[in-house]
Length: 124
Image 1 (tube, rainbow, N blue to C red):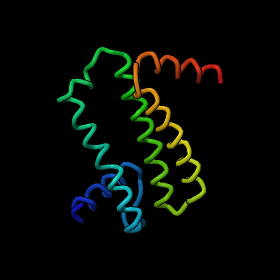
Image 2: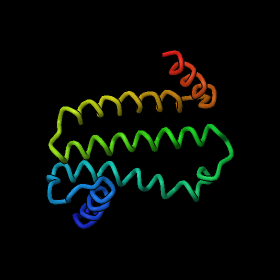
Image 3: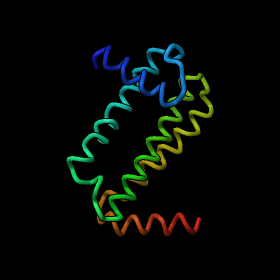
Image 4: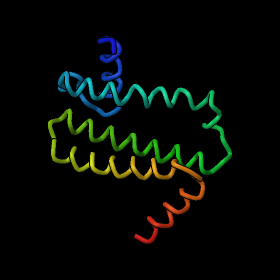
């Protein structure tokens, strides 16, 4: 990634998360840029794909789940930037569990699996 692009992405991330860009190490900045860039591209592609205006509730739930997953990742990255490694680790475990759940739902018959996922979560 070009340094200027990385700097712009990290600057936007810091603004959204109320962080000073100066506290972000170069290694953390690289991680932030590599996480935020693909998510930003995904969001940009929602309109042309028609997913953003889909009337299928499964699409809406999956997009919402992905958005929440991204927010959790952002929280972990913000904690990492602040040097709060233990809370960042806890959130990272949550991210892994959520990502695996989302991958399971998307594997096949996502409507049925999505319902199954929420029924299972409701019983927990």
